[in-house]
View 1 (cartoon, rainbow, N blue to C red):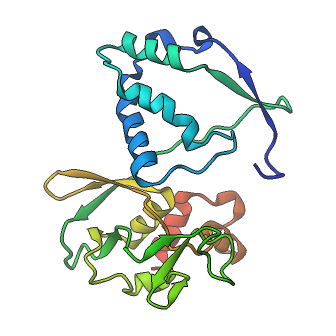
View 2: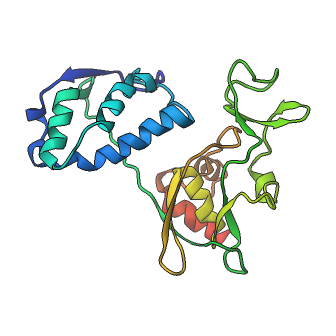
Amino acid sequence: MSEDTPGFALQAISFDDLQGWKDDDPSSLFEAMEACRRQVIDIKPYRTGSLGLTAQDLLPLLEAARSENISSAADARTFFQSHCRPFRIRRIDGNPGFVTAFYEPEIMVSAVPDDEYRFPFYRRPEDLIDLDEGNRPVGLPDSYAFGRLTSDGIEAYPDRRAIDEGFLAGRGLEIAWAMSKVDVFFVHVQGAARLRYPHGRVGRITYAAKAGHPFSAIGKLLIERGEIERSEISMQTIRRWLGDHP
């Protein structure tokens, strides 16, 4: 949490205090928890969040869920009531909290490039590596979580402009091609998307890594340049501006 973030407290409550819990069907969570377990074990543990929970803290629950035979909504609720305890998160200053939502934009794509589908989504390249205090090059800021492994050592990865101009092209990293460079940009910002192919097939992509350079908020830049009023800034107005200024 930053100094600008209001403090919060955790208040233990019962499952009976959860509105709609008795009618809920949390069965679909088990597939997601297994995906989380594989991520933690086989790929990369999640970073500790502001509540202080680590990936290791989650593993007992994820392992227990893996061994359960869930055949109904009641079974799923019983599992969570046996293994979990609900808490209400409330602000210490007494003001209402603010909750944001996550969504997956749906983007029209093609499996092969042509004159219409020209802008690629890339998978993570092999020379992009995670950085920590053990391998971070001298002079590369702590904010860089990723770097490029070369025969001469580790360096900063090429930035968005270099990638847009073809740095990753020809390496077989393309997942699909989109019609709009703006769509690709907003999927990068959002972190996930559903890809709809011409014949109706739908795929899904999600965040794997980034080049590591500091994020430049395009909305902030447009406000500073006087292109969009601060009171009018939104995804829609940014998209409109980009469409008018390709």
